[in-house]
Picture 1 (tube, rainbow, N blue to C red):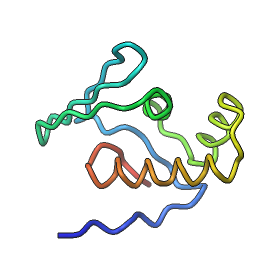
Picture 2 (tube, one colour; picture 1 turned 135 degrees about the vertical axis):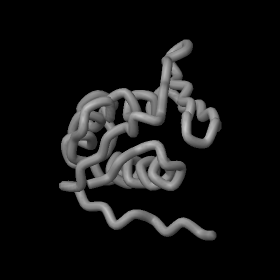
Picture 3 (cartoon, rainbow, N blue to C red; picture 1 turned 180 degrees about the vertical axis):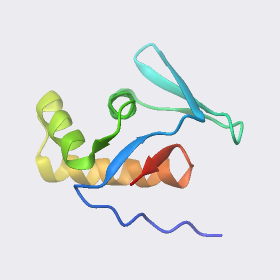
Picture 4 (cartoon, rainbow, N blue to C red; picture 1 turned 45 degrees about the vertical axis):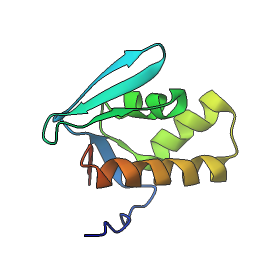
Length: 97
């Protein structure tokens, strides 16, 4: 079964799911999905996104934080964040409201 991308907007609210347990090892997040038993390892930028999602927030707020922290073009940042969130959602690791 193919997973379709989420219909998300900048005002969509996202957060980590409680079934995703994570720890940071040498600057990179390692996530265990308790429901599936799968492990995921994130690079340092994805780890920063994951860390921010400990609290529910809008995608717009998340992009603002990342744009400031990493001095990246806002459009590039938004595209990368949307791609990451779609991947995390397809794996069942985040809640999307």
